[in-house]
Structures are given as C-alpha cells and as structure tokens.
Length: 223
Image 1 (tube, rainbow, N blue to C red):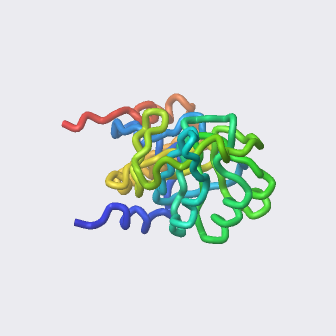
Image 2 (cartoon, rainbow, N blue to C red):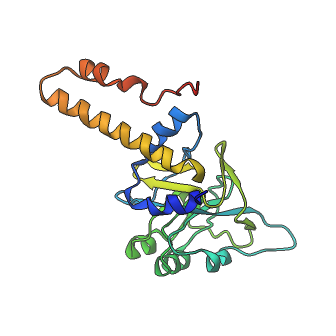
C-alpha cells in the first residue's frame, strides 16, 4: 500500500483553493476548516504536511517558546495551537526569518503572532487569529510537538495536509488527500462551466440548476 503522505506531497503544487477543498470535505462529511484563522497578508498561499505544536500556560517549572523550529523539515506547514489566545504571541520575527531560510512552507496559528513587518519583508506566509506585540515568554510554553491537536472541533494529526490562502486555512486527513483533490477539481470545473454558461446567455439560476451547483458540497450517501 502506498504512503498517503508521500502521495499527498507529490500533488501539493496542484492543490485546489481552500474554498474548493472545504466544499469537497463537506461532501465527504469530514471536518477540516479552521474557523477564526486568517491570512496575515493577502495574496499568500501555502500547502504542505502539518507539523503540529501545542502550547500551554507556563507555571513555576518554566518552559520555552519556539525551540521546536530546529526540528521542522523543509516543506512542512507549522500548525500551532495556543487555544486561540490573543493576549500574547507564540510567533515572532526571529522565527519568521529562520523558517523562511529553512524552506518551511508557512505557519498557521490558533493564537497570535507579532513582528508583522519582518514576516512581510522576507515573504514568509502566516495565518493567525490575531496579531499582538506582547511576548509569550514567561506566559506560555511548548507542551507537545508532533502530537494530534484539535482546533475548532477539527482533529489534526502530524502529516495531515494543510491548505491556506486568502480565505483561511483547511486541513485534510492525509489518507483522504487524493479523494479530496479530485472532488475539489470537479467542483472547480462545474463552477467554471456555470460562469461560461452565463456568459453565453443563460440565467444564473438556470446555469446553476443545469450543473447541480446547489448540491456540490452536499454530503453523499455512501450507499
């Protein structure tokens, strides 16, 4: 049996948009859209296998922030779960510069980033809940690396495939990647056909009905 992550990685460059991927996941009855996480800068896009990091509040034993970056492989997308906290950051300028230099594909944060100007200057793509300047040092620490995380009800395993663009971020289980890509491409094809039909003189309602637009994302009965 082929390795689904390897198969996914081979198809990353041709990955559909987050909108089409989300619709495809809906049709399979799979969650994946990470609500509340948006692009730091518009016009960015990234796709890659997930490298997961979980943060937690610091206690008397202390802890570190950011040192996990030494272990992130090129091409991975870092997914940080800081429980959606917006009062302190878990990603800053040093990390943006180093991740960019090492070929990391991007960072998605259920939490906050800072040093926006640095990330913008080097062209490093970030998606986050918010931006805020206050450091996470002595406030949070890394609790786990490369362990499953759950964000907005979406269970994410290391190696799952994350797609992020101007519309946000969505995660696809690695074992479903090929199926989701095929469905998303079909959705794109149908939407293109609708636009062509309208431009040729059809009404939008008629074009949508002809091509089954309203049921594209409807969950299919496996039977």
